[in-house]
Amino acid sequence: MSAAELEQEERGQSSVLILGMLVILLLASAVVAGATAVNLEARKLLSAADGASSAAAQSATASGASPSLSERQVRAAAQDYLSSSGAHQRFTAVEITQASTADGGSTAEVELAAAVELPLVSWVLPAHVTVTAESHARVSLNR
Image (cartoon, rainbow, N blue to C red; front, side, top):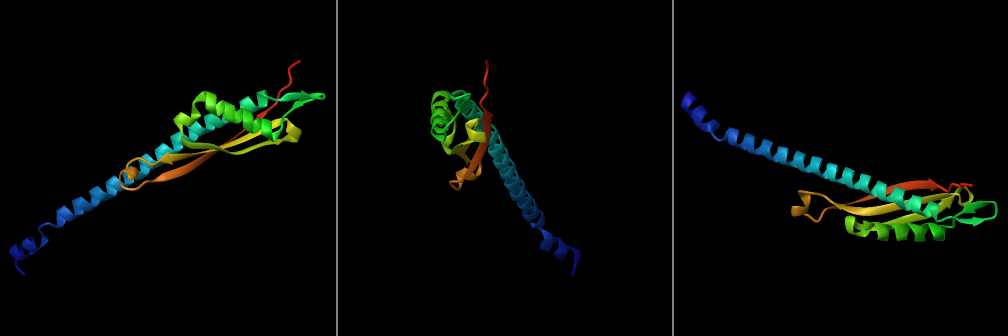
């Protein structure tokens, strides 16, 4: 084979290589953007869960020597907090997945879940990821 034939045969090879690298770079960017979006929404949801559990702990009623909570109180207070704080507008499909008490009613436990839409991927596919956040708040007694 002559040098001219080899040169002719290799023409266009760098274009394929550049195109392949561009596709890999775009996919990596989509993954990083998606991971960042999920992380940010999870942090925001944790903040909302902290507020909901704190609101539930503050709604404790005095029964006997120390205040205590029921699971119904925790769920109602958490739902009221989510409504008043505008969480339903800030998050997609936010819901209370768990509202319970621990330590004999002296700790409120709230778990929230919300859907996060992945950027870049959602142009092609309806891609949603569900994130959850759990928070605990203890009832305090001030005399």
